[in-house]
Image (cartoon, rainbow, N blue to C red; front, side, top):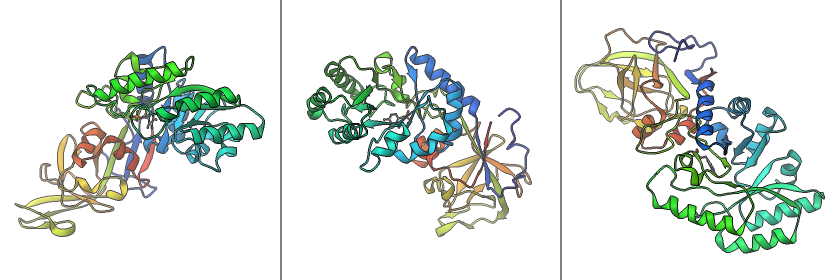
Length: 377
Ligand SMILES: *Cc1c(COP(=O)(O)O)cnc(C)c1O
């Protein structure tokens, strides 16, 4: 952070909103990540996956910012997210709904100008029927299951889809897509298997544009790029590929306030269950964020936070609204009421914290709570 509003090295908490810490979202880093992904896949375009409130970072701000960077294609998961996002984007931005249609959504989906990802024959028929009843052509994307068995038209239904499209002319199919199950594992055989299946789909649905890659897929090479990639986590600074250096820039910083410090003797029990017992005299600090703020309980006795680059281990169980850290490694008096410690930042990435918690970066981001002051830079 260069001269930001928060400096965990020196600043005290001056939050007038009553928040327990600062969640800082670096929109310039987000833009650089978008540019980087775009340049890797050019001439293909990069969409932005902004489901789950842009993985917790704020779909309105993230989407507006990326629109300003040239992004015109935005993917959400649920229809409700499309409704929430619409007012924040100009009309020429396309909003795609990955889960497609649920019965009852069709008219609102058509009237809002949203584009459902059609995942089954049932959804295809529903959307065609909606178009027929409204007497207009409606846009759609067809998703095919190429080996994940989650969402998408299964192989055995492809012929029926072809027949349906030949028999009706109510839908405007913008492109076809599929999703990779193991894109973050470069050497997984599943990637090649899915690519082969996608090529079979492309032969059966000749002439349609293709969308295939998520963040990991972008780094699997040109075969996976199609015309439109769908990155999510990489935009937000998460590692797109496991086991190699993360090429993306961090976007999120989290600093949390100290609410109490104390010195305890050897043999003191710390936190719920008293599972942690100090081995020697120990200086402790309690910080104002817990599992309700997205710091998973699995960080108990495992994770750490940082102050001025010094690692401060989490001791005892993470509580709902607080957790306790061992600050013995710092000179006495360094931390006091209102001091900020770094949970995510220069010394700890979302992938680091996720690893300590036995989770993935996606879970860390999408869980960050709403009790922090959010600041966008
Ligand atoms: C969530 C999702 C993405 C984005 O995945 P990342 O791994 O975050 O890049 C892309 N496509 C589909 C279908 C998704 O569900």
